[in-house]
Length: 120
Image (tube, rainbow, N blue to C red; front, side):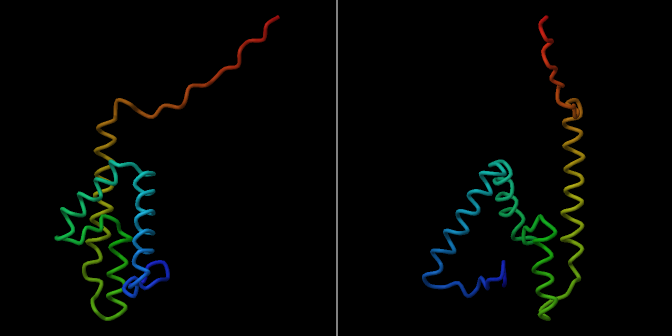
């Protein structure tokens, strides 16, 4: 499988430490930047849904393996709709629920700052 121009299945030997550190550091900063709540949600979702659907939760992540399988003749596009419609519908419903939960907050423009009146 190719990711970013590199065959991840051929990474053996001394490169494993480098690959591990690269993935570790990248994931560390991703979680740090995005926030622990989202990071833990992804981990819990992957553990809960990974054995059922593969736990993609992202149309691009679901599309990659299906496209690869179809192009190499190992599979087809029959289940592609599951990995497109499922995450998009889940995201839309999640946004609606979030808007409902925070309806009383609303979106307000920032308070306008006024310059102090000049003294005469």
